[in-house]
Image 1 (tube, rainbow, N blue to C red):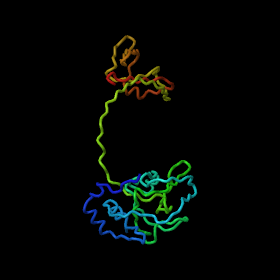
Image 2 (cartoon, rainbow, N blue to C red):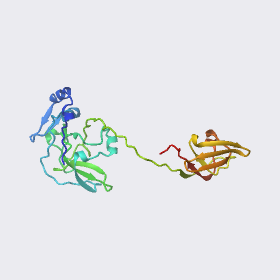
Image 3 (cartoon, rainbow, N blue to C red):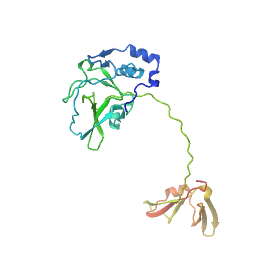
Image 4 (cartoon, rainbow, N blue to C red):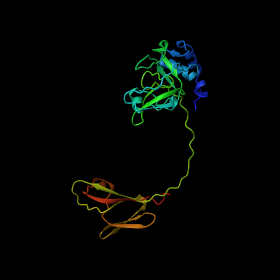
Length: 261
């Protein structure tokens, strides 16, 4: 399905933009295709609806270049520009939702670009223009051309027009039920010798820990919502724990809070 290029938001983008487009220098070739002196003039014309998008007038089959394994037919708006291309060319968008304003070029590699009158001018390309998407062996797009004529753009990917920014749709909060189970993982710390001998480490919320002083040390009881685990030994605060380095493997149990649903 072809995309409707001119939306209400674009048509109402402002009188100042319209005036700028009206005064822009426009070159028209014998086929009725147009080009602008600058990229900004071309973009303004696209956004205020005065641009006439380029229409191919010749016919050529796809011609793959070295390193191109396949070719796919798509609408320009369906193509996502690879991030490497976006970064290397300092592009402000990775999509062609609003089309492109590409610098017109001539013949090369056995294919034409635009007509001679538009070479060096910025030509508006519609988001619903059919294009050939050439891909590498991994299925990644590496080059685009106009589908009907296989005419090439100024680079492997034409320069996109940044689409209008739209407000995000309202988000509806969805209540979901979650059950959190204790997670046991294995960890190993290789560090300097220490007087501590660690058999198990249990992480638990503060409000689930009960401490009782005994003759043999501090008894620590941890409520995990289902059973009570009791460990008798020396209690160590966070600072001591952070500096303990043990050359052994021991289980670490993370106990969820009883309030977790």
